[in-house]
Image (cartoon, rainbow, N blue to C red; front, side, top):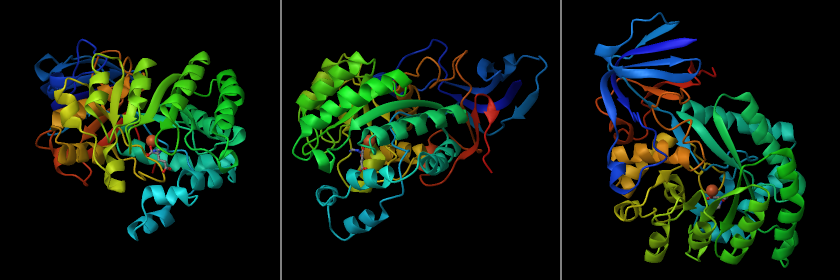
Length: 414
Ligand code: NIG
Ligand code: FE
């Protein structure tokens, strides 16, 4: 099956020479070709260039993209989209004055979601989660990481990971699974945190490895949840089972998690709303991708990750949604890039780099997605007619996507 796009107003994020990620000043550059063609064959990017060089070969389908742009699909490297029910009640509690921390202390928060999930069948959890997955695909996401962490028991964590596996088998989107057993301390282990960590390490990790249910390991390193020392323990033990670290750090407080992540060569450190000079310095010249989650800052009214400071210090940055029932009930990457421009002072070119190639790197998918490069998967966004690529963040809240292509095929769930 081959499709030829012709007269593309601008083909965005063209990388002839593949890059793993872009950092610092490089993030301001977003290579593109104006008046371009793009040829995809058997689900992969086969050729692209100026319209004047467009091949005359026979194809199955030709799409005239006059006035429209094409960019690689969004790469959302941090989500929790497999969850049960919702937390709309807590949303109203927060409007009425309770803080996210106060709600968690009352047994709400992650423990509330865990209780709901433990009581739900695997089939029902799949049915609820697939609706969210289809929604994010329609919004332009072509690769997504999904975490466990609302199970907090052996059975419920495995249930979540099996649902992620089933989604992966049934949808053409790229999916990576992360084990986040250390998301909160279950009430049963309130006075025995080490006992819970040992359950994760000695009972759950071996099962995950045996069934190949996850590629990454995560922990919520935060005051009142898990310490830097706990983080070190989980990452060290995770490595024994082949799990690469990607961690939640510095959402509310800076307690040394960034340094622990770097010392374990974490693939990414995520959240980073509160960053000290030392945290920024320790990420320099490492292979660890900092990931910002601006929709979470928006929804909880907490500080935004200091992206400008970090990029100006030469760091790379990825953007992701954090789609989850408590802090970010939205999986819209278009809103994420708009918010990063509006609230974090990133330029449209920087946010597109952050939400495509850098996001792909943060889930170990940079070899196959995140840019228009020959041989990469044809996961693409075809925009509506737009004036410039800045239109996507500028027209925040409106949908500038006309069609989403995954593995070369137009996606339509209706
Ligand atoms: O990334 N901060 C930790 N975990 C999630 C939110 C968890 C929840 O409130 O359900 C996050 O924001
Ligand atoms: Fe998260």
